Image 1: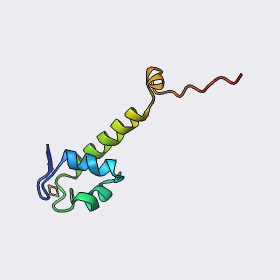
Image 2: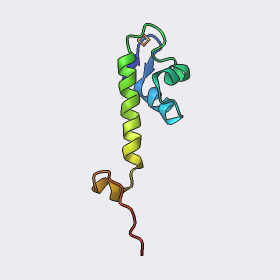
Image 3: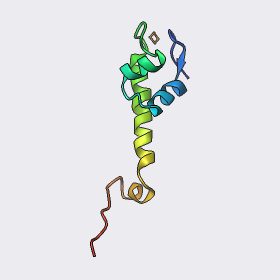
Length: 78
Ligand code: FES
């Protein structure tokens, strides 16, 4: 999906920027140019960044913790 028409940047490029460490609109703009011209796409750029960060947070939670609703299960000391 094309997100930034001015710089011709799609959501996959923004997601790749997030994967490479750009976690704010400014950092993504520096990395690929999205949102750095007219500004009309900034809300959508923010949404893609947040969606990708959220997806990465969920995918990092181990399976057992996900079943517990994201709560961290601490091991019981013996
Ligand atoms: S549409 Fe992205 S800066 Fe203009």
